[in-house]
Image 1 (cartoon, one colour):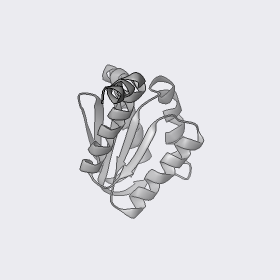
Image 2 (tube, rainbow, N blue to C red; image 1 turned 180 degrees about the horizontal axis):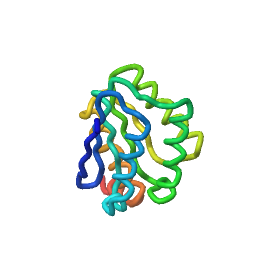
Image 3 (cartoon, rainbow, N blue to C red; image 1 turned 60 degrees about the vertical axis):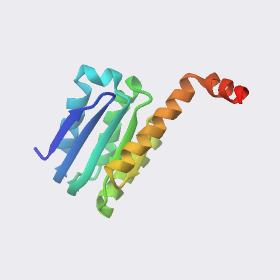
Image 4 (tube, helix red, strand yellow; image 1 turned 45 degrees about the vertical axis):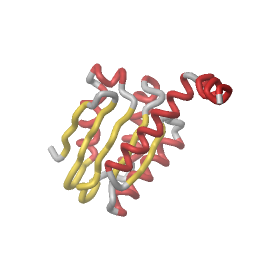
Length: 145
């Protein structure tokens, strides 16, 4: 099993390595969606820094994105960060994101090269969520200055 995962306070972290076939991505998704902690999850980090290659059939990315439609109906505002440095891995990430966007998946996506960049982006997303939940908070602060 070339992946491991852990739950964080408000999210889910998963690291893949080696050659990653479609069934392992499905296994990761099952581990995520079958856990009650996903109900309160705000983000997923998929760390592909050590992935050598994805082993996917021709329609593999479409199948994975199609399966995410069901989860998207439940977790509408999930932020998904895909971390990787190898061009071929980043290409698969980009294909996945493009496919999800064509399927109208409402999640926020970000592709980056390091976990530090991923966490920085997630902090920015947290601020956006906060402003969306309480849009008048910023205008009250502005009126006081």
